Amino acid sequence: MTQTSENVTWLTQEAYNQLRAELEYLSGPARTEIAAKIAAAREEGDLRENGGYHAAKEEQGKQELRVRQLTQLLEHAKVGEAPAESGVVAPGMVVTIAFDGDEDDTLSFLLASREYASSDIETYSPQSPLGSGVNGKKVGEDAQYELPNGKKASVTILDAKPYSG
Image 1 (cartoon, helix red, strand yellow):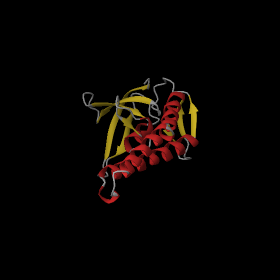
Image 2: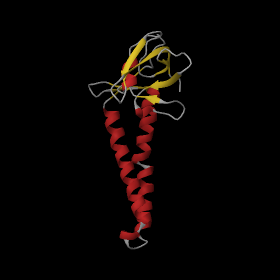
Image 3: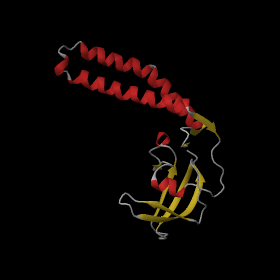
Image 4: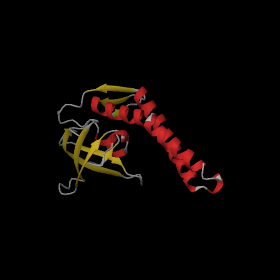
């Protein structure tokens, strides 16, 4: 999954289905659940000092924000195939890099939108400094990206394979 400058998000069918299911849950059963929590807390009395009520309202706000994010994301989504195993770094691939030519100091991560982040593997956005630096590079090539302090860092692409979940 990736976002382009035209505000289009490319998703695999699997990613689209996961996000659609999350949206349907948050828009339906989850809204009913949070409304019941708010109603129960409201019945406890004084709302100014009702921690349960305020916590439920905060949870509702976060949930509604996520619904808006998912709605916007899915409205602009284009569903496509996972990237081919071509040795070229692209969104939807697990990338392994070595820092500054040190083959022992490596990092593997998923190059994808944060919406597709999982706890299984670290995820870097294609728009992040590292993500934009490696995107489009071939296995064996060097890539540069800018560090937060303004200095440049170099990495070598060791591997790039489609993410399999």
